[in-house]
Amino acid sequence: MIRRLYEKLLEREVMSHPRPRCVVFVISSFDGPGLEKFRDLVEWSASLGIDSLLIHIGQYAGDLASSLISILKDAPADVSIIDAERSASTGRGGIGVTISLGYGGKKEVTEAIRSVLMDVAAGLIEPEEIDRDTIERYLRFKQKPDLVIRAGGRRLSDFMIWQAAYSELYFTDVDWASMRRLDFLRAIRDFQRRERRFGR
Image (cartoon, rainbow, N blue to C red; front, side, top):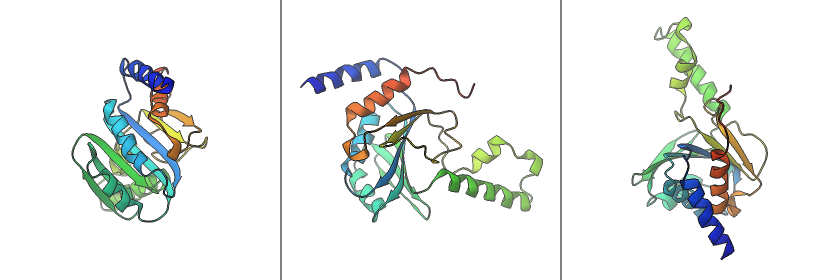
């Protein structure tokens, strides 16, 4: 009862301030428990007016993509699931959700640079034209997250390593399967209390 009241008060506080438009949620590994939590996180984000949610899973077991498609097919979201070899999508409109299965930032940047070099060799780009904007056009993920939440650990992830250069980072010891809406609200409130400096 007390926890539910605290959650309501916290939600009211969060809703009275600007929320992040794009949130990244990093999970180091997933082996089965907490599958329903994916739908919960989508619904929590949508209820707070977050525009874009990205979830990165570093390691996983089984055909997780099919399980996610099944559980999110009726979610209030447009969902894209991406791994190193393929992509799939589902959803009914609403918040944009991208789930990365083992597709890390180093691989993404490497592939982007390789594509730029191929276009230079084909004469489509002059070497002196290559700048930050050029690289960003070739990245697979176009979003620039406001907040990156790292669940169950204190180590950084390389996911969206380019795009998240000026993102706010939030580390929580709460692991994925134990994550509650209350914990998610705390992360958003922490973001709201910070003064963003964007590298300055």
